[in-house]
Amino acid sequence: MNRRFLARCLYADLLKLRRTSLLASVVLAPYLVTLVFALFAAFDGERFLEPDRAWSWLAGSSLRLFSLIVLPVWIALTAAQLAAIEHRSRGFQHLFACGLPRAPIYWSKLFVVWLLSAAVILGQAMALVLAGWILRWLKPGLGFESAVPWSLLGGAGLTLAMASGFLVALQLWLVVVRRDAVVPIALGLVGVLTAVLLSALDASAAAFHPWAYPSRALGAILDEGKSWPWALAGVAGGLGLTGVAALDFSGREMP
Image (cartoon, one colour):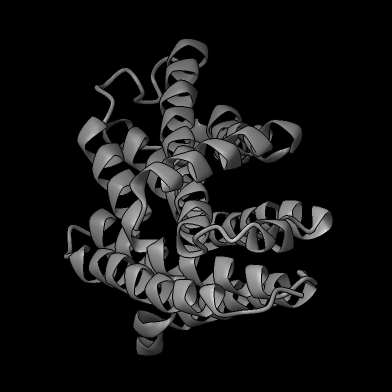
């Protein structure tokens, strides 16, 4: 693969993001999730919060909702919006007509979606820290005076970024090969709903559901279990699927 051309593709894709709402969603999505639980703790925390578990409650509650629903939906919408930039301007057809290498173009899109996903995961961790510090100041005595669980947040963030790799690859492939993003987004929403249902039923099938990989990996961390199977499945599945998708992209006539 031409590394210099790949770097140019990455630079071009990042420049295109300036005219979209993707960067704003990276900031807003995690803070909206955390705000729900922060308000719950601020208004009713004295009743149910144990002082020695305040941080673990806020982090666990926010991250579980984020990993199960918000992150998979956000990935589907982000991949669709990134592909829509090219589909609307017929950018793929123009690049193909120029005779440029096709695989680096696809790998660049994948890296951008994954980079944005990692950024929103990092934003979720920082939102939790900020919410805890604000609650420490507004509502002393709830338990947020204790140290921030940096190791928990760091491990959860890294694991979520790895476990979502297969989902990033799958959603990007679907929206790139289709000019109409309705079906890929609908599939993403159905995937989230079935992952929620399987998680509620505690079904063993959730272990093989790509949309459930992030939440299963996070649950293993919070329950002090082994999260590496889902992190490994996300990375290996994402790389394998992207290899197949890049070959398909290289030989495809774009709509």
